[in-house]
Image 1 (cartoon, helix red, strand yellow):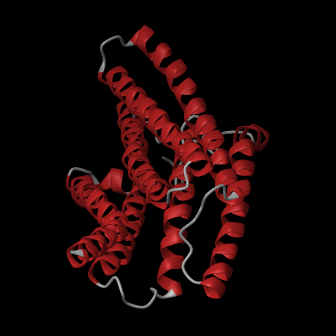
Image 2 (image 1 turned 30 degrees about the vertical axis):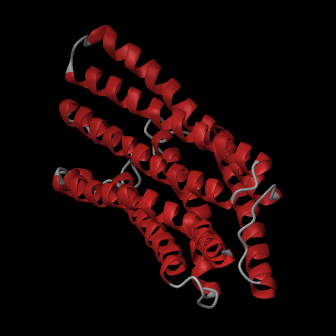
Length: 293
């Protein structure tokens, strides 16, 4: 009578062991399809002028980075599902996945800084003013890069010494990087929303109901979403890594936050298109050439 119970216990244990890999694969697969569709639509419905903008190219690279992260996640977890008793995955693949999953948000957030340059063109803004505007995001991003580098170093050494590392619980470097990410998003998006609101209020006094005003309002709403959701996910990540000892929950929040950030950052492309449209209406060049948004 004990044999069936032992078999059931073995099957239950196996299911519990592969459940995190299954959830990670199934959850991220739809996002991968969404990103592929988004990339195709981005190129299909864009003009040559829009594709020449720096921010458009950075958005396309951001989507590709998210796709690479999804592929690495799918490979690692699919191997765990299909070959649960195989030797540990190569250090290079696991390290690359950790680098892309933790480092990609820093790249996504850097694109948001370019939107600030829409209000402070490089060629017409005094250097001291640019320094005052960009000093905070620059310092925060340097701090995030230091925290990320320290964690990846410990991850590489720990993996090479003790094998796969799946416990990020209360990791000081990761927690610090995510806390700085909240500050980074709040400054970049908050500053952009404030300047956009001011310019939108001025434009609405003279061109109420015009296309430019409507576009600026749409960009404002998209930017609000781009600000709220990533910050909420960042806070959820910090709460999870400091209170819940779960690799699945932490990784899932991290990956979903990356997808949400990529989709939200596309608002910068829409803003660049609105600027291009406004400049054409005035028959004037854009404020920044060669590095405009």
